[in-house]
Each structure stands twice: as C-alpha cells, then as structure tokens.
Amino acid sequence: MRSELRVDPITGATVLISPARARRPLVLRTELPGEQEAVEKPDSLASDPFLEGHEDETEPETLAVRKPGSIPNGPGWLVRCISNRYPAVYGTENSTPEETESACGNENPLHDAAIQPLPGVGLHEVVVECPQYETHLSRLPALQIGHVVRLWRDRLASFQKQEAGWSYGFVFKNQGRLAGASLPHSHSQIMVLPFVPQPFAAEIAKCRDELLATGRSLWADLIAREQQAGLRIVVETPHFLGMAPYASRFPFELRILPKRAQAHFSSLADEMCDELGRHLKDLLQALEAMAGDPDYNLVLQTAPLRDTDDGSFCWRLELLPRMGGIAGFEWGTGAFINTIPPEEAAMMYRSQLQRLVSQQASADRP
Image (tube, rainbow, N blue to C red):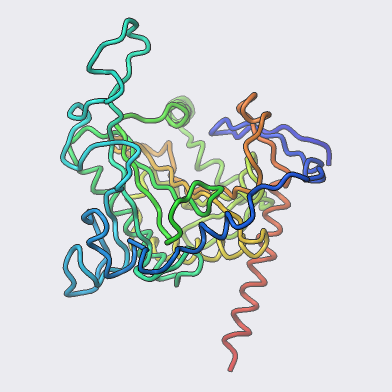
C-alpha cells in the first residue's frame, strides 16, 4: 500500500497512512537500560502514597466510591479522587477564575497587551483507580473499572452544577513513561479549565453549524456510516461502539462512542458505566496482547460544562497508543504519520478479542 492522505471529517485531523514507514531500520535506542523498569516498580510498597491506609500522604479526597460504613480520608474506599499535589493549574473547588493571580507577570502589566499573561487557573485532580498496588487498569476486575467510570461521570457532573464559571472539564490517563506517567500506581486525572481549548471549540462549532444548516448531526451520521461499512468497527456492545477512526493518528488508535449520541459523559446511566468498564477492559487487554504492552494515553472528550445537549455533539473516549514518537514531520505540519491502516488495526483487534473470549471459555471449563 502506498501512502494515503486522510482527513477526519469532524475533528479535521490530517494523517498520512504510510505502512512503508514501519520498515525503517531502527538503530537508536528509545530508552536507557532500566529506565522503563524504574517507572514500573516503586522502591517499596511503603513508598506508594496511593495505597489504602496511606490516605494521610495525599491531599484530601474530593469524591470517592466507598464501602458502606467507611469515612472520608480513611480506609475502605474503592476509587478515590484527590487534589493533585503538583497541579498544572491552580484554584480550589470554591474559587472562581478571577481569584488566582499569576506568578509570571500579570500583576505587573507588560508593554504589549497582546502578550499579557493571564492567571493559570483551574482544577487538577487525581483519580486513584484501586486501593491495592496495581500498575495497569486492564488488570483490574471489570466491576472495579466500572467504579472508575462512575467516579469520572460523577465528578464531571459535580462541576456542571457549580457556579464558579469553569468552562471545560475532561479526563485523561497517562499509562507508562512514554505517555507522561510519573507514578506507577494505576490512576487517571481530571482537569477543569476556564476556557474551551481552541481545536475542540472549533470542532463543537462545526458540529453545531452543521445541525443548524442541515438538521443533521455529524457524529450521529458518522456512527451510522461506520456501522454500515463495518471495516473499522472493532466491537459493538448494547450501548457502545469501539472503532478505529478513519484518520487514526497512531497505530491501534481507538475511539469509543455511545451508539446513541450524547453530548455529556455525565449523562451515563449506572448500567452504561458498568458496560463501559467491561468494554474498556477487553480493549486494553487486546491492545496489550497485540502490541506488547505499549504505553498509551486515554482521553475523555465531553461537551463544555455549560453547553446544553442540542444533538450536535457526542462525547468520546480515545485510546492513543504511544508506539512512535512525535517527530519533525508532525511538528512541521501539524499532521501525523500512521504506519498501520485503521482497517488493518480493527481486523487485528477483532481477532485478538476473539482469542481472549476463547481463552476465557477454556479457563472457565471444569
């Protein structure tokens, strides 16, 4: 297959599908000996601040899934959300975007208003995904992952109800050093910002303009089109669709969507959270089996906190394996090179999921 240029019909992401690039000789090492092992293994479990029983080593919890009778900031939790001790943005749940000053110059106006810095305000929290030491979300029981999904939902819902003026909330997970992780205990993060990032704002505006002009939803049309074609579908469950995007930026990139478009992730019912937990576990296990346990990012994109669901937009959970670096082509063009066509990736996912089902069936036999 020769190189093929693709553009995502909604996000506008530009991708070169170039399988030939995978045949390049790789001589340089991607990491120094022992680097990856150092991330995967703490010096001792006693130094893990996320373990149950170490609650006094973290910031106070803002939300938790707990066993009956347990009390906040003590043992007995299943999933725990805490303020990030080293936040990228600063603020508190009760503060407003105007209350935090910048330390980088906004209180001393510069000569040019066009380059005047603004306070880096927002909320930055950590979701500890299990009370015991575990490095991989995929190794947790599906029910536990369902608890994680519920906490994501409930925390985002709480920000929607606040009057503080925050505009945008999202969830992300960094798995492994190449994806940006600094602590091995399985965790994800939630950030809330006083603005909607420009690329995402442009996508939302495009979806809204299409609905106003034609009465049609770009996301609903995409879901229907992909279901009809089937080439890039990885798995369907009663409520969700897992697919390799047409313009996948990375090898084995996945997009998980509700089959019936929803703007806000906070709208998920409990049974949908549990179903998504099972779905996510299966897909992560398949990725790790196929690609040798790669580092990855998970990103949950959902509608801005103040937006109503007008039918134009749909939340999505993106799985972004970090199997190749961002290099000169990407920095120079803003586009991506992907060495595995999404149709091939989807076929490999389907085969691996079937193997996992067969293995589970064999393990269940007496």
